[in-house]
Image (cartoon, rainbow, N blue to C red; front, side, top):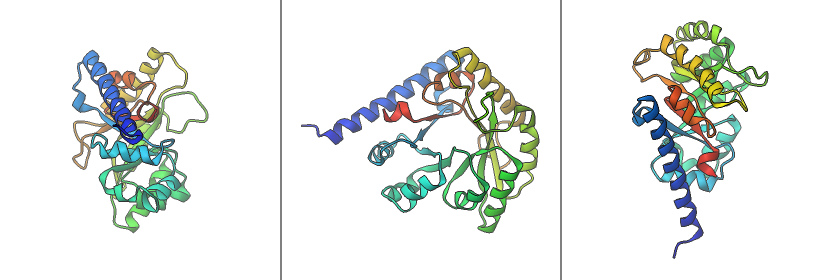
Length: 240
């Protein structure tokens, strides 16, 4: 007889399979290989027990958190500490420079660098502990005033400056779609990020890693994959 825990695990596995199916369909439409796309589990609103279940399936290797304090409470001092080394932890929310030191210490990647000031703070604190910090530059592809990110016109300049910083490893771009937009408007916005990505990153980064284009969330990840995303950030569709 299945327990409630078993039922929830099966439900989460079905959710993962559904997301994978959606990625496969989008790849088929755009002539891409599903192996080119990685799923990041966004755990901002997820229950700790569900996070544990998802990780223990072995099918999710990257976790995105929006706040520095959430990671410390859950992954360093809290109930998920024993799983910390089983996943890559990425910061995907806006980073205040006064929290850069802690972010460098506890994250495996900071995917929301949106200014030279932020890049410099990360680089400085990474140098202090002898760490080379993987980062993504966040591009603003919507007109929302509340959304973080550097303008597409300035992204290349920030990239060049960040690449001069010895303790940063710039691996690609991240962007968030315009809210409440039609699919083709979202596709067009994602295509702006993809064009910059193609312009600024080749087959590998300066450190030899495969470049990352992080586009797409639960509501628009298929469109993002069609536009060229290599990493989708899924929360609601995974943990529903």
